[in-house]
Length: 241
Length: 367
Image (cartoon, rainbow over all chains, first blue to last red; front, side):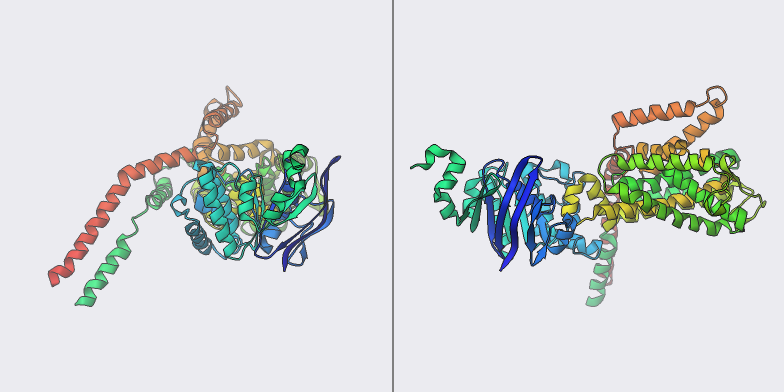
């Protein structure tokens, strides 16, 4: 069953059409990758699903409910969490306090929020950082913190915006491993990504976007061999062969 | 025998496992010192300075609750004024004791807080600060020029309200010496600081910290930022209004310029900013520093250099913003933690170890 359905989504900024009649369907338990060159509209789609932008027209259906017009905190309560491309840690708070902001979403009191936050940190092997303030963390740890905080809200659907950007290959592998573990816990993932290789190994389905619309959809294999994909990324001259 | 031994061991670990916290001891000692000050200090003027310190610490703490949501209010005087005017008018014209009237004013101010906050908090940027100044100034000008307000409320315009004197009458919040005011102000300050401390340890505190740090991130984690800013605003307004009643009863006189003017708004904000406007103890620290210096300068140099205290405030504000943008609270706390680590912790640990050793000895001796 599809957990998320995006129907005929449109969004323009002034005269610029960022997203044009975009459709997407994400099955429960899947890892869906959204890729495309710069300016293809990936992040705009992402932000409309996360309710940070409202679409000019179209619908975003999560578990049978239209999200259009809702506020980010409302969809968080429904079970959608997101991370940010440019990480947004609460810099003056410790890692534990950062994660507790997320766990409060489903916890009745401070003690319960603390316990759940410690569990999440434990699961992400992040416990030793719990008392470190946000501004002292490195880029990788900021990414991990984003993930920990998003998971803390106990989402059914997790939206990751360029989670892999800025990581070195080792860190990348660890993160991929982590994302698979998250999926194995029954959380559906939608990943917006630049890094083709990471997406190819991680995702079950991929949508390649170009100029605001869907160019190719399919398994990583299908997308990798599609001439349209090669054109979009590398230019016409490579597509002919 | 065996049972006894295990019993005493678990007792030792339960009692000694948590070292005594220096924080509570220091806070207890400071409160105790404040409690006994009037026993030694008989000069009413010096007591008055203490009352001012507590009063502005109270107002600053109430104000900083909005600061914790990342919002700067420069119009808290309006709430002092509404609180003071409500209780005083109820007393003057209807004979309601200010002890009751203060709660009416507080509830009224909480509603006013929602009315100002709801539209302003939905916008980002400096709109709330601007709205708050505008509201306070409009209110001041309105009251200054209105003899009889809506529903026939006699506001008495710029003349202000003179609280009818009843001599020593605790039942209507009037005392003929400074000491009762001193203790009331102290109690209000302690209650406000404790409330702020509690708020900071619960959901609201976590959410406010998140909102002021990054509102988008907070919203994505399920925080309804408008709602939590409003909660902070309502609590802040409620407390500030109670302060307004104290102001009217303490000075026995309240007028639009003094109680609703920009001067008192800025004084409240200054106390918070200098001390650390997003911290629990910051406003209290700020008030301890600013209120006496302002008052003494006004008292001793006010005749020759009128307005010198404002100059001094400005200077202090510049120094603090340049060198300690987070306020005095954080550097002071760090210094305190270092002191604690050096002087206190080793002793506590020694003490605990010693206690456990002696407790451990006992069963052995019996055996």
